[in-house]
Image (cartoon, rainbow, N blue to C red; front, side, top):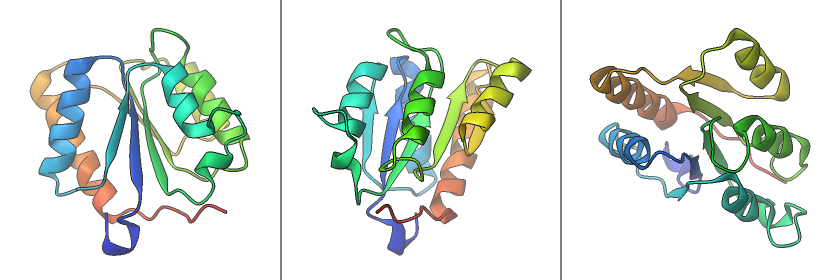
Length: 148
């Protein structure tokens, strides 16, 4: 991300360890050096985003970019997306849905809830790596709003 956006933390919610490593490696290859905070389940990700009291106050003033898989072991990514976009402290944080789910109703539902980008993970390893590299290039130029 550009110099002004260096304080942006990438929150990666991905339960597949291989996918998580591939995502991080290819984001780095694209020249994005922001902190990446990984979570393998929704419960721990929500605790990070909303704090012990669940208010989200802990995220006030934090620049966050959320990479979200929809298929998690303890809850759906759609539930996480709804909570992030409903909270005044996280609602402006960009959410990139990165998942194997290509169901049109699910895609529409995510956009209706406020997802900024929806990317279907390619099944092929090289295609997936290339898609993530391109996503990293996108991150390098995107602007993240300041959060109140």
